Length: 240
Ligand code: URA
Image 1: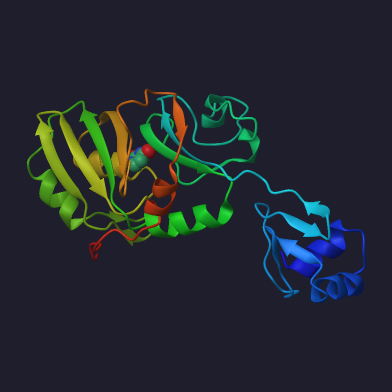
Image 2: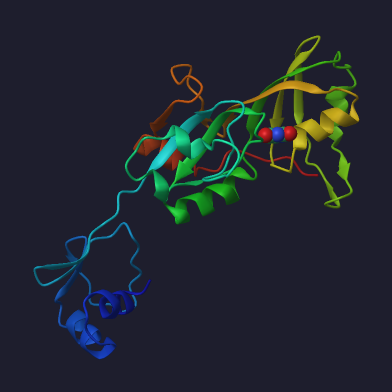
């Protein structure tokens, strides 16, 4: 929101009085005098008029969570427990998810109340590698490696999936690296190969790894380095 609009709304003054106060140097954002009436202000900024606090800053939250199987990647649901039910922070209701996992998938999910961060992250994470560990009912055919590298055509969305990397780690287990996040993507790709998944778990998103110290259902705040790291572009991405 623009500074003059916020002032007019919250300082109980008209827009003209707000503009005059700003240009007179009476308004501070995070302790610094701002004379630009068009300066952008968000919920995480403190805004003062003289010694009066017009807006208290909201706590910005950036969390990683180990989603257990059975929990929904949503903030509320009438039927199933959601990942938000696992978070005991007093500001938990301000959170939203930066990317989802299926209910039957476990592993790393990120939550925040900073819409600008999640928007940038989603734009970046669409391309950053996401690594999944999986197990199947049927034996994984060796030809699956090439099939995932070639990609699949999904006619419902009319898209061809980007090359994905498959590392077969056992007769019925593998690790997949995706550079995108299509609906039920891994399940659908394996279905085409004649394999049903018995488990799917996300190990990492870009440089963010789910730590062993975080058991299913647990969460922790991201460090300031991790908040930045998550937005750092991650090497070349494959072309479809
Ligand atoms: N692919 C799937 O099929 N499900 C997920 O939750 C993530 C990737």
